[in-house]
Image (cartoon, rainbow, N blue to C red; front, side, top):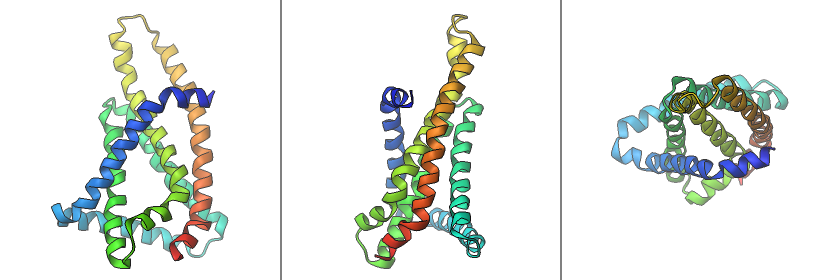
Amino acid sequence: MIFRLLKRDLPFLSVIAIIFAAGILLGRQLSEVNPQMAELIIKEISDKFAAMLRQMADIPVWGQVLAIFINNFFAVFLVFWSGLIIFPFIPMILCFSNGVPVGLFEKIVVAREGIEPLRYYLALLPHGILELPAFFMAVHLGVRFSMLPYRILFSKGTINPASEYRYFFTESSRYFLLIITMLIMAAIIEITVSPLLLKI
């Protein structure tokens, strides 16, 4: 069932991936275009992760995995429920804005460490290859969620609202089983494999 849904939704998921990539491109240029905003974003994210690292320092590996999973699941949960605002562009904006720090930190890490951009992205690849598709699925569901009232309204009574919402949440539950599985695997990789690649 989930593979059928993925095949059906692949074109839209691809558009979401492009929007995220556009955020990365903006992040790469932001330090030159608007240094003050870039500095503000860097400080906010650095403070957040520094606090998270301090909390994780004295807990076992399984606890670190759980902390990473909860953090990522919260981001997915936020994007999905942003569909309640019934403005389809809200999940898209969240998707775009999540790409900006990736590009922004690329510029910083490449300049500081003297590495090629490819190495930066290769270090993110092991957990990102699971984490990002899970995030894109949540964005997709958030957009669909926000579109439901319009779909029902413009159907002029040909769509039963209760059935439409029931069908949507049935599909969403299947998606979320996959999303949760992918986020758990991504958190395990982020704690175990990615640090080794960063050292290399």
